[in-house]
Length: 158
Image 1 (spheres, one colour):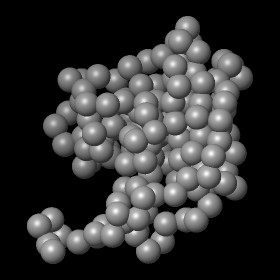
Image 2 (image 1 turned 135 degrees about the vertical axis):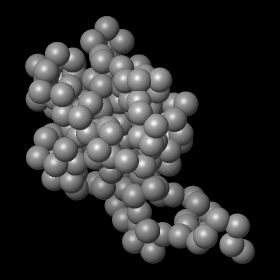
Image 3 (image 1 turned 180 degrees about the vertical axis):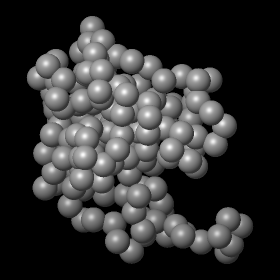
Image 4 (image 1 turned 30 degrees about the vertical axis):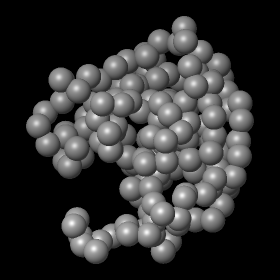
């Protein structure tokens, strides 16, 4: 299975340093984790929600990552999540922290908060099987300017 990640060029694709420094929806600060998406368009949206339109880095890279189909994974189903999980990080962090503590699988599959019907995969760079997950392609990446044009305006504003 292929997954995608968009990150700044200076960051190593699978070291989890960004997750360790900044945390994320599913993993707390101080714990290495690599966030990926099930498609490049979803990775685009996931990255876009974190940037102000006038502060988008110019050194973005799209990473295509191969995750062997036979690797074990834990899945967080949409039905298992409490109401408000998309806006309340406190409802998501315990899932990822517990998964990192167990270290039973290298992959945690979670719903995307941006498009809940689609999945993101979080990779544990400290799991013994992480070496089986490889970056197979990288290329410079830039958002289509039309995606940035109206970012930050109120819904319905013209």
